[in-house]
Image (cartoon, rainbow, N blue to C red; front, side, top):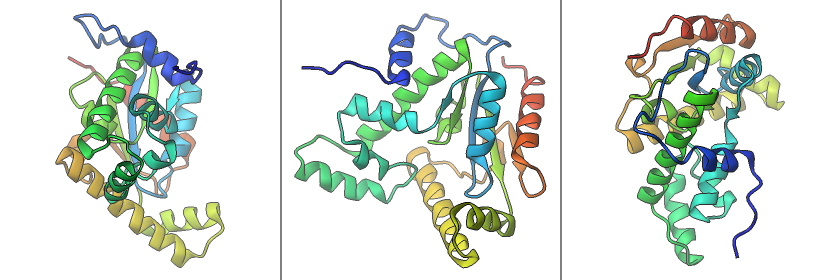
Length: 227
């Protein structure tokens, strides 16, 4: 027996599942933004501020919730795959032991399906999509793609202060996360996450607070004309 769907993103995707021939009409009043960031560059903070300022949904962990719903896989299992290619092997083994049908291709197809549905909703009602390869999957859609970067020193200081760890621990954590994300993008999308041509806007966060970065994204978005 199927449980009652209560999660907002699942409800939203269900409402947007019927697409017309003009799948992604661009409305300048709707803010469809795909944002990614290096570890410690403030991506989550910027995305939160931007979504609140624009009064649109922020799609972050909700993306994994939607994938878990569609695949009927354990959410904790899917969290191992969140922007990490190395988690695919362990997740695949776990799925075999648990008697569940899972593969990297299944995960990729579901991720693409979920993000396309989210983009469809965003192009009608607005939304900020954080990470998960959104900028690559939605490259040919009227979605403004932003990437936030930062030098190692300021990013390390932010992570150390936020998590209460030493600078050395923060530096190691940042390097591991950035490497995992690069491998994730390269493996699933055959793209270089450091190539600026994949984005409409790249911002260095070294000397800018999250609120100002959100301002810059909004100002740049207003200048964009999608064909």
